[in-house]
Length: 194
View 1 (cartoon, rainbow, N blue to C red):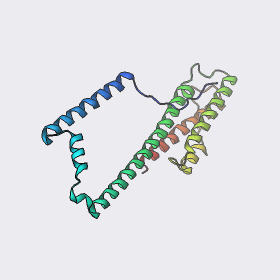
View 2: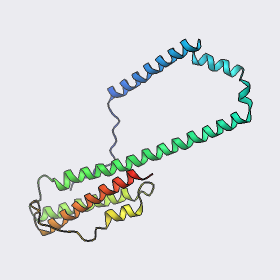
View 3: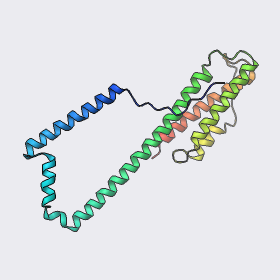
View 4: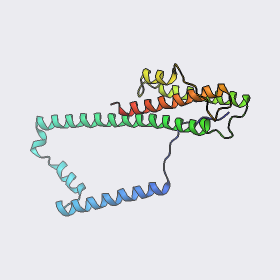
């Protein structure tokens, strides 16, 4: 039996990480240098001077209200970004499942050649459908309608396929084709949702 992929995440390469850190550090140094030339002092010196004697406008009710509003907006923006990031990870997980299925079910190697292979293929197919359905069960990103659209096929048009071993296998391949179409629709719907 084929093993379904677990959650896949890639951290990148060590060279890419070091290069990214070096680039950010160089940019920060460049910006601090420009600030020092323009202001005549480093950002740390300016902040220390500002803390010693706060400007009078920082003691007004309008300034305090503006700080509260800006803080709330930043908090809401960070929550929205995190939700989007989680949604994208869920969609990427579905795309990985789809890719796994194409590689291990549709383009199976060696191909299905006897009734025993059909039974094994069906077991792998059922496991894949269950895994995708569990992912679609996450109500933070997917609706019940999305899950039902994938789970319940209704009428499946079965046509003789050259790659099918027998009529049962042809029927299962017809179901798989419809599952692919529906899963792609769910992925598109999810990415379009706000």
